[in-house]
Image 1 (cartoon, helix red, strand yellow):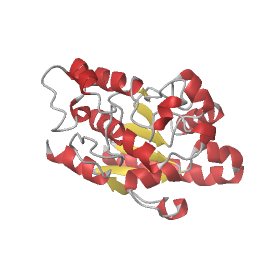
Image 2: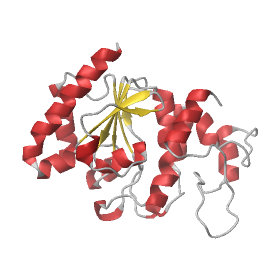
Image 3: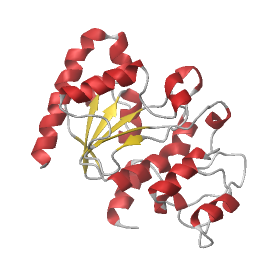
Image 4: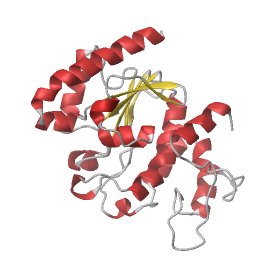
Length: 240
């Protein structure tokens, strides 16, 4: 495992080993401890007691793993998994908290009203979905009634997001909302205290702003979100 991967795993609070359940305690067991399925996915060389195979997956393997995941109870109520969408070599990575009802139906992140607003936010800084931009969520399945994802649900999805970050290797990460910021940074600070700063996620700059769904309910905060976007654009320009 290279140093950058170790840093990413440490930042996200991950352990890069496949953990076998020895009691009723929930362990981070990303494909539901389905060793047979993993062998089919990764080949006969998979050792379920060593490094978690998620961290070795290609895009194709990762998408298949997510589509078949039963590692947490969210799979029982989902219609579709929501893997992520966009440029797989993107400079910009936007991370929200989880799919809503429309995303659950379509299998794509940010396709409802919040998605339309996100597209407008991207356009305001001369970006568009799929062009140097990748969009993902902290969890890949919709939490019922659009509640915040539980800790165990976030833990089950962490290896998938970690691997996406590693494969994309973005220049800048934008955390959309408090839930995304908390889970990416491992901090429970207020959103206001996290905004306007350049945070570090394993050597990748990270900026925090409001979730588009929140902005739909709190229109006056759009001015603050615009400041965040301008700050993000200036930060990206400084990285070139």
